Image 1 (cartoon, helix red, strand yellow):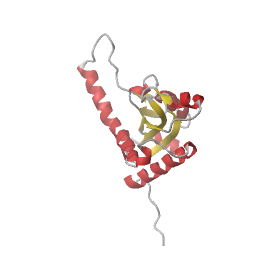
Image 2 (cartoon, rainbow, N blue to C red):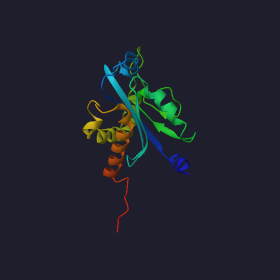
Image 3 (cartoon, helix red, strand yellow):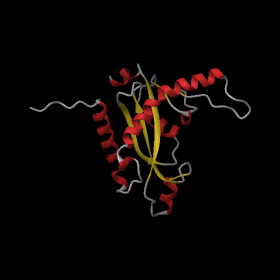
Image 4 (cartoon, rainbow, N blue to C red):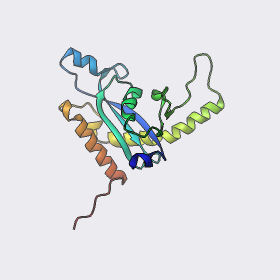
Length: 175
């Protein structure tokens, strides 16, 4: 039922990385070392409604070096096959995601391509705002120092607090 309702929307997807304590064992260090951030990280992915009104899906605590597109492909199985998404350049190559044009080495983007990229980024900014709302909580922004097994629980709790803050989560009045 919910999957069919979501196909009416073009959901917005993005991910972010958060530093974590350096693991003791060498194999774990290799598993969590992100060359992009030059640190040991955990990756989170958010999928939100196009109006930024609610968080549809959260992936929390994946190893930092895992690419955005692979993270998405694992999670896409839970959505309807007709579901459309909007993402950044990290998702280029996935047919169900609308992504911006990348400039080639030989030539610049045309004015029309730049304009289309600008329109796409204006649609995508809502997921960036949702990530910012998550990172207002210092535990989701700074290096994660708690037990790594508790990471997913902490991030999902923060997502619940963000949903409460934006008014997506309505609690019944007691009494």
